[in-house]
Image 1 (cartoon, rainbow, N blue to C red):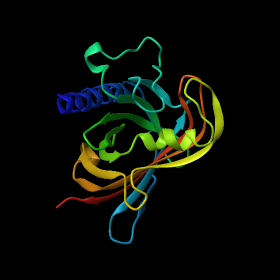
Image 2 (cartoon, helix red, strand yellow):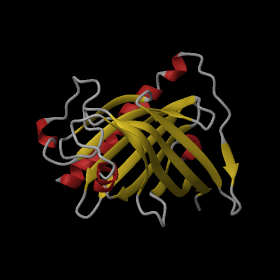
Image 3 (cartoon, rainbow, N blue to C red):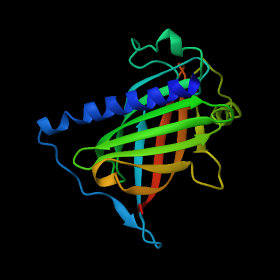
Image 4 (cartoon, rainbow, N blue to C red):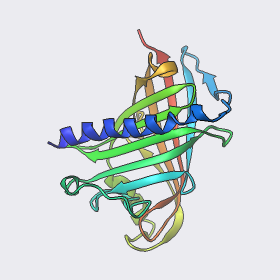
Length: 217
């Protein structure tokens, strides 16, 4: 049942992001030049940033999930049937390395048998959607800020750099996408630089997504 819920969450998130991005053609949206770099083995590298809390569009999660569980806007709530398992659903604006807002993203996490699964869908006007899938230990982020004095329910100021996943390997895989990204494979690394936590558990700082992609066979 948990896997069904997780898969359903992915598709609902993708639908929401793509639907929102579909509004862009109704305005004269300037497409900025892609900030990509060629890597030595023939692939390309592109880095995306999210600034917290300014780039947060919506967030909600269960009490057993990690940082950021407070609903935003406050009226949002998960269905009762989904409230017993740790999960977090976030929607953000996405920036390039120059600080320009270039798209929107959906991030879902849910606990599996031996790890926490994380999925991203990043949608960019005129470029398409990019899909990322990985796993990590969600308790590690809570532990990192707790070591420096953070207590749930209380505001906290400090600095923590947290790599989502194993420090010896990428966070997960690039699973293609649509349009420009449809034939891409590769890896991504997700890292958080936290500069504080609000009294409702919402983090401040930046999220960085570092992608390395190749054309699929």
